[in-house]
Every structure is written in structure tokens, then in C-alpha cells.
Image (cartoon, rainbow, N blue to C red; front, side):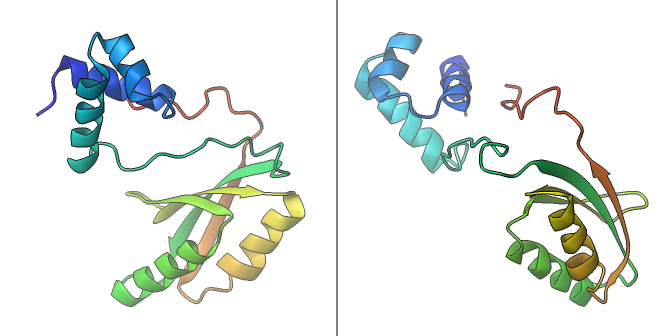
Length: 151
């Protein structure tokens, strides 16, 4: 069970996960120890899964972002596991979703350039025996950055 203070604490941490217990306490009107205990409870309850730094892909040389839809030719446990294994081994694929509709998967990909994206699609994805079709959309501009979850 979470209350309004927990919700506010989660909102604050989504914006800045480096906040100390003292800073959280000050923002929430709690003592440092109360804020720290609430954070620990939210972590142990699984509401806070991890903490991570948000990096700038362009400054790291990852100038191409794309969404790639993948349709499998064969469906079944072995095909799904093979494709999931392939996705897990490729660092360019930063997230993957199973979908309803025509495509089976949606991949979010960051690459250094179009040549690297082309290589990933033609020499990795399309050579996978279970993959029947790949459709890609290259991101021209991201008008809203990955936002915190709505609480």
C-alpha cells in the first residue's frame, strides 16, 4: 500500500534518483530517517526496481534511433525463445516489446549511423530463420523525452 507521501517520493526519485534521504525528507516534510525508511520499503516492495543514469545517445556517437517491427514466419516456443535470445545479445536493441496486430515485436534501436542500422537489420535480424519480415522507422526528432511514469 502506498500513500500520497510515497507517491510524491516516487515522483521526486523519477526526476532525480540521486536525491539523498535528507533532501527527500526536506521536500516531503519528513525526517531524514523517515524518508530513508520509506525509500527502502518502496525498494523492497519492488516499486523501485533500480536506479540508472540517463545518458545522451548523440554525445556517445549513437546518432540514429529507430523503431523496428519484426514479424515472425513461424510461431511457437522455440521461435520466440530464439528471437528473445537474439534480442538480449544485441546492445543496439535497448528495448523490445511483444505486440498485438501484424507485427510480433517492436524494437527500439540506437546505432552509430545508418550503415550500422542496415547491418543490424540485414546481417542479424533478417538472417534469423524465424524472422519473416522487418519494417523500420528512423526517428527524425524526439519531441518528448522518455518521461517519468504518471503517478
